Length: 396
Image (cartoon, rainbow, N blue to C red; front, top):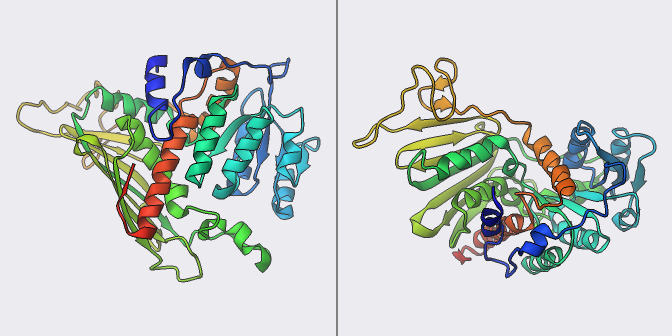
């Protein structure tokens, strides 16, 4: 992506802050160690944080030098995943004072992202902040302004934004491969109650924070946010109108966040995007359908397919030999209801996102999933949650 396109995409309205050339290109790299290693600290060693630590170990020149969690049993678990010389902290502010730390990975509850990230900027640390970026819109605006006026590399953890498969799909759509896009159908189904094991009752809210509105945005923030980020990316704009409904209709277990959510986003030119997220006794998993007037692209986490329509004035692609667009061969890669599998080499999205973060720091350039794209998705998520709770239509 060239710089002009990046500025356009990452500076989309919303929060009153535009990316400028000085922010994109005038960054310094004085935080990088002389031996070219990047020392990263993981703040939050729950499921996501401990899941990323082994991935970091596989990335050359990216080293875990510190870990942090307020829950002692979580911190002890993480100690088993790192070398004995890695420092362990119970207070993230003490970690931020560690001069050996170049960058931080924030994998804490949603409501803590803004404060931790802001403090990390103040201490001059590069930041990889898990999605969704910030829970409160005023706090989100404050963080965007602070990062934009700093020399910090900031990546938002929408890992599919880094996927080479997803990037290829976005290029195909922009090149008109499925014609004019008019609709998105996005689903994320979970077969289970979405709860984590709690060793003692006193830790219920700290462990299962996703269930409580004080800390969480529920499934919209934790799951659908990835798909919202993708739709915004494809359309290169933010939704103008957001409608939503949800409820607690399956797991009556004291949770406050919904166990089913149904959202409709309306974009310019009448494009609609539907986001449905369910957690109950239901299979189905994750899927995005991008519907154009010449075809459909169906996307799973690590695979995708393209199917063209037969219609007057448009010649259906022939897949008997090779699909000229995707490189897909006939046979096993062609599924009648889905079409031809899109062939694109790619890493696991979480690993690719961390590789991109390392590369962004070394190259002194902001990543594609940056403070601005992350903030726009966060604003959309917050408005969607407000719409469901208030039962009102929200406007950007």
